[in-house]
Image (tube, rainbow, N blue to C red; front, side, top):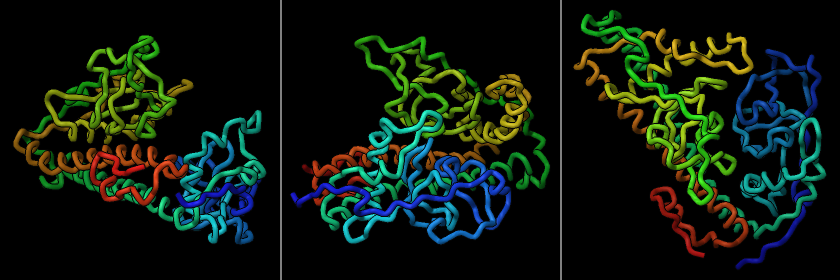
Length: 398
């Protein structure tokens, strides 16, 4: 194996602080976007500034950033030139000894370790000194680039699938609106042989269980519990709770199922994160009469309205009640038109689900390879990229 060396991060990487802002300096509109921790991962409300700053207070596409307070983790920035906030570092590795994407992968792998014992009673955070004094072992630069190339190929495939899915979703929603809201193929008028109903007429909305009452037995194998957190991130992780694998079959979720979070963060999505148990505050949406493209599209159509209704609730956690589903009017096409439209929309959503399932597999491969490659347990020259991105088998030798 090629010789690896232990180095201190601060010796081979410059870490730059962003700028701290007073609240009055953050504007609703302005010349420069301000990247804060809230925008870093979840794209929350953007603020702006008209201040002209030194160049090192801006970041641009391709810069390696690290959020070090409250939310933690690295990101290769792709949102154009913005000002980055004080709670974000811009990291400039010495290109002679440290590959930027290799460092990004190492930071991804090491976030949980880095944040153990972090400082702060009000808002947990790392310090710049903490980060600069971290010791880690790196291979020669050419090996770093190969490792980064392997992991980057997997990330690139995941990102390509995401872009394809975003485009497909936009097409599907535009087609749905054209047919079922604007009736464009029918001269702007609903056909006489179509019917009017509501969401409960076209689908069953099954509320989940309080899964804390259905824990696995001491020796039994459990299922991860699908909660709002898992639905938002698209997968279960080591922090996901477990429930008994013997819960009633209707409360077990499989890839491709339509899930509607009706409390807290309202969203509708296809679950593609593997088998799990349905927790309360989530609906599993199914139908014996209609295909999933139909009831998914109609539920998605009313999501913004449901979000507004939930926001008006005078409670600590906004939600909608089942009677809102009954109030949500839908139009049901004739059998002939339903089949005709379904031949267009159903394959679009099938492909979206297929791509999402593939992304789950690719992410699992990446997460398996990442620590093994970066510790030298697996020689990068023995990894077959084409096999990793086209089959469900890991193709490498130690």
